Image (cartoon, rainbow, N blue to C red; front, side):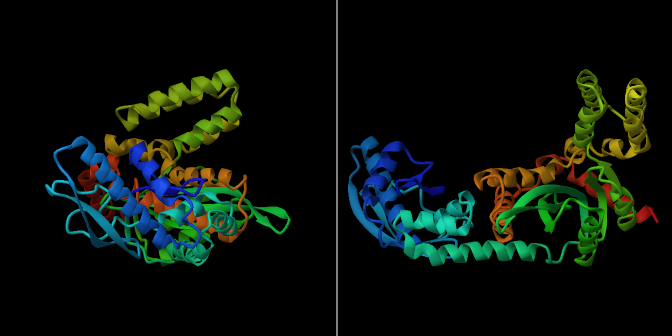
Length: 410
């Protein structure tokens, strides 16, 4: 169930018909002054269930309402008493309730507070929004939810890790954080793992002051080792200066794939616009090659074409050709996933939306941690909850490749 508070203070359910939403709004209008989040959610569920029965009876005129019965349900850690409406036939059951024989909704933080924390510039701004809604007594609950997410962020960077990964994705993101009356630069060092079941998870998200640096990447990677990570089949990263040999030394059995998307961005900065367009078109053909050998030949033709106009850029590409093409050695289904750092961009993309909502920067490091924790949990409880479709299609092949690699390479 998706629940949010509108500017008018009403509670809307995105999956409900407009007529039911209107009935809920009418029931809640003017009655929010002293409600806690628990009371508000209880009233919202009970009213929505009643409104849903009204809509049901309109379509089933032979059936009649038959009072209600009390039931206890749970949303996260909140236990809510709900009045469940009945009909004489017994055929009606509110769709808003958990499934039969279940008391709990799927794992959700308190929806109203989480929506506020996501949208507001800071926790204090969220508290102000609660006051404007007449929900000032919920401020303590808001602090509890915010602290839970911040603690989760801190724990994420210290939890023990499984020793084996199919893939390790690395990328950094530049942000600005308010410090007094100034904005200071900071970098997020993000590591995402694809495990041997095909599931994605954020392994580390470290905030460090200043621009991206090799020393900080070394600290992040050593921390992953200290937490238990040992064997990686393929590491996917951009061509940040000095990072390639560091990765090779710490994970000597891993292939290192350099991000194709970053290569395309670099081409736009080193080549004239018409040349960059042609470069990217040719690169798409190379990505679709049926073998590494064929791709290597086409890559060399690409380099020869643009070497006269960008010799330094092309020389760097030639030197690292194998690291740009090693994704082609993997099953076709998973090649798009392994050719770029887009997995990390899913985290960065969530954060970018939160940054814009915050006015282009983050009010404090604590606020940044909160927004990051919300973004990461949203991914892992949402689109990352199940195994990655690309990896799932060939997971047995990937695991067989993993076993052969770890057994045969010294």
